[in-house]
Image (cartoon, rainbow, N blue to C red; front, side, top):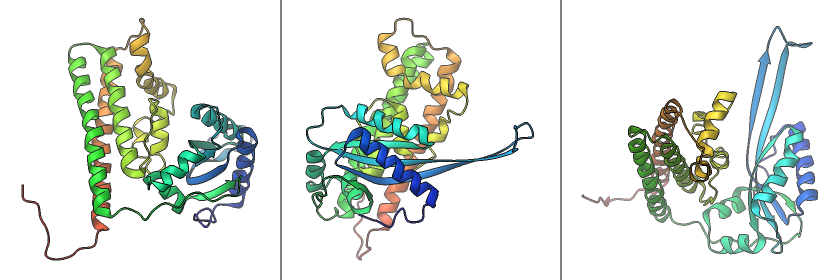
Length: 301
């Protein structure tokens, strides 16, 4: 664990983090809480129409936690996540939570799972309820092995994302707006899962696009900017896409206008193009970290 990763946080934010962990522990009773990332959004506002001080500055941090529960925990992961988020909201901060049971976490470490092994090596243990160490992961995989693994996972998942987008275009051309949005939802879901696995090794199982984008925020803000959700109009637009997974199947009165379908089709197309650039960037990063030896081995196709 890297105990120095949070040492440059302002004292006020450290105090907030301590209070947040105390609240989560009292509400959830976890075995361990490990921080694997954080980011801080600063809003600096000025207006001559503000009451009192015309200058406002707000700091809104987001913390990424791996919460490890005991093996007897009966609550579903989404319930634990919701409880943790409820502890953060009144404190003016946000959380992105991943939950694993202790036995599951130890087995994943023993098997060299890339996500939890990275969290083990580089994360910060914020709470250690049972005082016992986690299993030690094996040495990291050779870069060439990792590169091939990422490539296989990417092409399988992202290939599905591209096919869903192609189907969405076909449905839009035929005026089937509701089917268009459903396929766009599936396209975004598979693209997000693909890029999360490439960058972190974590395998999400949720259909909730909001949660998938939150997980992506741990390593990039660029994809999220396509769905800013800062206004009611933008929030409604995103919700139309996010709810399509259930609405298009179960709501007989579900309708989507051609205008909305066209806007979302453009956004999703841009998101997939950007995700592909992210994948290329990751592959280049892995290639640059590989040692070079001569003579070169080149595959001629």
